[in-house]
Amino acid sequence: MTTKLISCVILDLDGTLLNTDGVVGKVLKVMLNKYGKEWDGRETLKILGKTPFESAAAVIQDYALPCSTTDFISQISPFFYDQQWNIKALPGANRLIKHLKSHGIPMALASNSPRESIEAKLSSHDGWKNSFSVIIGGDEVRTGKPSPEIFLEAARRLSVEPSSCLVIEDSLPGVTAGKAAGMEVVAVPSLPKQSHLYTAADEVISSLLDLQLKNWGLPPFEDWVEGTLPLDRWYIGGPVVKGFGRGSKVLGIPTANLSAEGYSDLLQEHPAGVYFGWAGLSTRGVFKMVMSIGWNPYFNNKEKTIEPWLLHDFNEDFYGEELRLVIVGYIRPEANFPTLESLIAKIHEDRGFAERALDLPLYSRYKNDSYLRSSQ
Ligand code: ADP
Ligand code: RBF
Ligand code: MG
Image (spheres, rainbow, N blue to C red):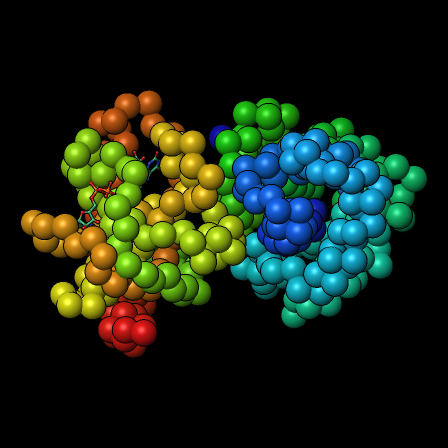
């Protein structure tokens, strides 16, 4: 890729900086339970980027709900309204905003949401609002995305040429709008397995964690360490269950599956990919660990799977034992591999990154995290 000379970054809000889908999923889960149905995470595919009316109609049809679209919308709206104050930042959003701000790169926020709703959503994220030189809501332009108007207005207010703006967007209408404005566009689709739809974008990445600013002539992130990105640590634990992977039999790589039950919110928050950290087995000790969390392209799972590989030779199974994980860093997004050999080779490369990184003080100190040894 040739380096472009970008001077400003224009960001979308919902689905790009904020985990709005997480809220949508949560609200739909509750709503469908009321009707005695169970929400399927994959259904998000059908509602993303649609108007509330179209989304509601799709859900009613898919779940054969005995109500009208307008009924459904009026039942669900108060839930969304209550949630707008606590929509979480997507992984990498805070890091991106802080980084660009500290390097003096002007930023604009251009969202199809009404201005009032943007303000409400920004208010729970410290330092975000005043990081943007320009904020434009869908109600402040004549036509929203996919029309280029909102992006052109942002460039005008930033006093820069459209061609020196980089747009970061999760939705197809947003990508269309950015390209129509003559800007460079990085797409960060909020849903898995959708990247093939984003052909108009200049680049498609899995999450903001994978953004490479140097490709755009912007100051690169300085936080990657030996192929790993330190994260705010997070925890998962539970008894090891029998998995459904190709694991030790086909890949020669055993993964100690944990049930995703009780972790759906946590897993929703983290992009499908390869992570690493420390693993505690109550009776055996603490070990280095590299894991995939993801949709597992080989199977048609309804839930993301959690598949930690403990970097130690056990020579036996430990189903049922309590396993606790402290995840401290990220390596790469989940990928589809053309051959089993290439998948296996990549996983061994991941292992190498994790093994080496976990010896660095930055990560090794978490080996003593009390979570790894305590049992409930
Ligand atoms: P499954 O289909 O049950 O996931 P795997 O082939 O992935 O089968 O094997 C997983 C099991 O292997 C784990 O649950 C655990 O009991 C055992 N095991 C042995 N060594 C390891 C290891 N180094 N890391 C993870 N699991 C291991
Ligand atoms: N499977 C994939 O299809 N794509 C991946 O990128 C991928 N990365 C993995 C990384 C690690 C560290 C481990 C332990 C497994 C990975 N897997 C990946 C395997 C996947 O989790 C799953 O076990 C198999 O795909 C199931 O057949
Ligand atoms: Mg397994």
